[in-house]
Length: 142
Image: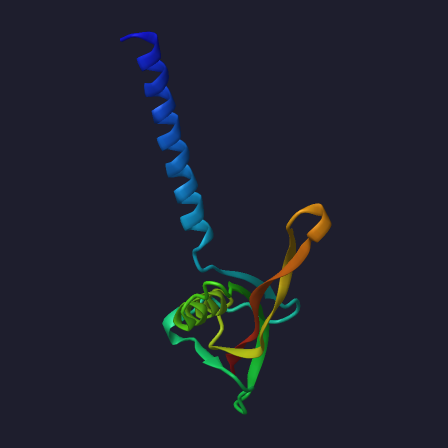
C-alpha cells in the first residue's frame, strides 16, 4: 500500500476512534445519577441487614416506638433527573444495609451544587449546576 494511502487510512481510523470516544463520553455525561452515603450512629444497636423490599419510606416520624440507627444522604442529578422510583430504591437499599425497618425523609430539596464559567474573558457568565439532596433517618422498630 502506498504511503499516502496508509496515512489517510490511519487518519480515518483515528478520526473514527475519536468520534466514538466523544459520543461515548457525551452519552455517559447525560445519564441520570443517584449516589448515596450512609452513616451509622455510634452507641446504638447494629442489627443485621434487612431486605430492601421491606423498608418503608416515610415523610413523618412514626408514633410507634423506634430506635434511630443512622442516616442516608442521597445526591441525585436534576438534568436529567432519575425516576423517583430509582431514588427511593437507592434509599431503601442503603437503609436495609443498616438493618432499618424504615427511612424517614427529613430533607428533600433541589439546590446549587456547583458552578462553571462560560464565555470569553471579556463577557464571562457564571452558570450554576443544580442537584437534588435528600436526607433520611434510618429507624428500627422496637
